[in-house]
Image (tube, helix red, strand yellow):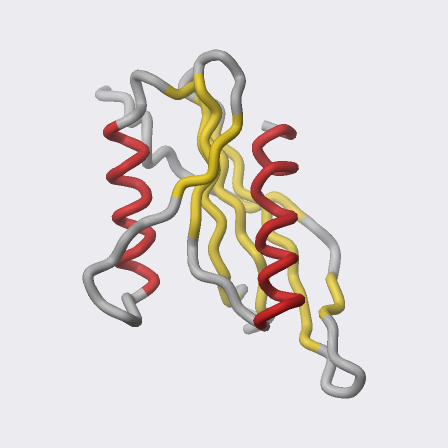
Length: 132
């Protein structure tokens, strides 16, 4: 889980620093432990974030027999505060699920990003769904 967070989070931070935003993306870990980036290819120039997330989850579900873990990073607004945050939802095929959020603020003067305190939030299984 730590490896997945360490693989997913820095790219979001780089994109925020360079562009002030980032599109949702995923990171997967093969059965051999190799980390790879995963992107969704939308049909439109400016896809809706929810659609991109669903494409990423669909793609990862299709690879679920070949990978051991996956993480999806997206830009979210925390409730009830309305703070912007990077969210990384991590799943392992053995059933572990964890979501981590890292609040941030764009500095008005001087540019850059100021980060808050990282914390875990409730999450749900979306790739390796268990039938009960």
